[in-house]
Amino acid sequence: AIASHKIPDSVDVIIAPSSVHLSTAIGANTSKQLKIAAQNVYLEGNGAWTGETSVEMLQDMGLSHVIVGHSERRRIMGETNEQSAKKAKRALEKGMMVIFCIGETLDERKANKTMDVNIGQLEALKNEVGDAKALWKSVVIAYEPVWSIGTGVVAT
Image (cartoon, rainbow, N blue to C red):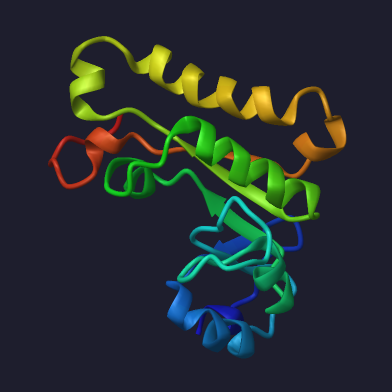
C-alpha cells in the first residue's frame, strides 16, 4: 500500500521486513523511492554458514540496503561492536548501503555512559572502514535509544 503513495523525489523510504517476507516485499514494490532492506547480514561471504545470509545472497535477491548492528542483534544475539563493524564493511565493500545502528541501554544511560557507548560503536565502524570516503558515502547512522523501547520513557 505504501508504494501506491506519492513519495517526493527528495525522499527515500526504506522498509526492512523479516527475512521470510523479503521476496514478497521485493515483488510488491513498484516505487523507485521505496527501498527494501534486510534486517541483518552475515559477516562472511558465501559458504557453509547454515542459517546465515551473506551479502551475495541479499544482492542475488535484488537488495541494495541492509541494517547492521540493531540493538536486538547486539543485546539478544550477543553481536559485538566489532562483529557489527565487520558486517558493515563487508556489505559496503560489496556495494550495499548500510544502515548502521547505534544506541545505549537504560542502564548505560543511567550510568552516564551514553557518549562512551555510542562513540565505541562508531569507533568500531571507523576501525573497519577507515578513511575510505567512497564507503562512508554508503553509510547511514541510525541512532536508536534502546532505553526508550518498551520502557514507557520517551526519547527527548
